[in-house]
Length: 167
Image 1 (cartoon, rainbow, N blue to C red):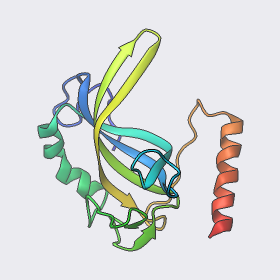
Image 2 (cartoon, rainbow, N blue to C red):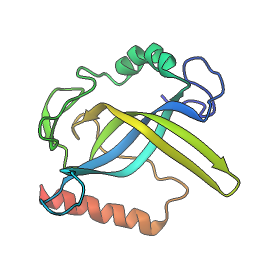
Image 3 (tube, rainbow, N blue to C red):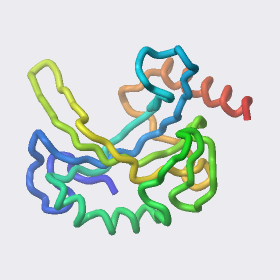
């Protein structure tokens, strides 16, 4: 599903600074204890890994691509809702699973890109979960990038072993 990141996946026009993108993320939700945050937050999403799989120049191009994306991902339950924020329904099989464990999610983001010679800034204005998967339907795996260090990989492996031990 990956495509040329400089062009819209639907109309192939060059992407403007403000655009939509579809991200594949490996994430987990952590519940906050009362008083742990000054904000009115009950949970925090921790993203262990993210990659953009497609860009769309506007809402119309996303809506045109949406049925194919849903079909390609084999989604039976797109745009999942969570009641308490910690238990989710798999978008593929419909099974319930803990969102506190590592899982794969696809998110549609409305973002703005600002490039400077020394820095690239992505500002997300709005985001919506298109799908999240139980580990049985979509294992939370990713390919090691050239930028990861051996230490990063060891840290991830240690965390995975800790998570397996907690199950």
